[in-house]
Length: 162
Image (cartoon, rainbow, N blue to C red; front, side):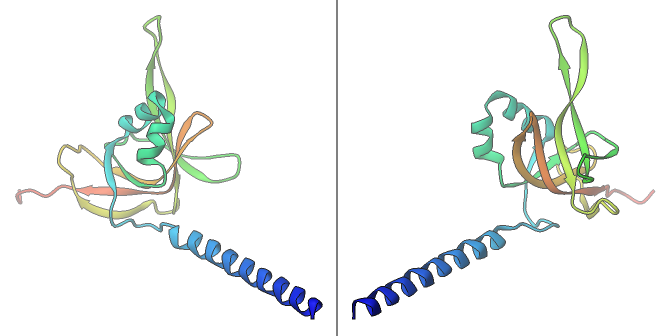
C-alpha cells in the first residue's frame, strides 16, 4: 500500500512538472513578435540611445521588448557581425572635451529580411523627414542598443499631381 502511494505521488509530481513545462514553452512562443508589426511607438532614434546612456534600467522599463519605430533614422550600409547576421548601424555624434567630434554606434538594428528589408510603405508621419526602421528593442548589449526583427518603412509622399 505504501509503495502504491509513493508511485502515485511520483507520477503526479512528474505530470505536474510536464504541465508547467508545456505552459512555459507555450507562453514563450506566444510572446514572439513577427514583422510586419501592426503597432509601434514612434521615436526619434537619438531619443532612444540618449535614454539608455542616461539611465539604462529606466530605459529598459520604457523600451525593452517593445516594437519601436525609429523615425528619421540616418542612413547606413548593411553590415555583417561575427555570427553572420546582417544589421544596420545607426551612429550618434559624440563631442569630447577638446571640441572634437566622432561617430559612435548608438543603435544596431538586426534585419529580419536582409535580402529585401522594406516590408511596409506608408504616408510620412507628422514631423518625419525620411524612412523609418521598425523593430523590437532588446535593450543595451555591450554598450550598444540592440533591436531585432528590424525592417524599413518606406515613406510615400502624397501631394498634388504636377
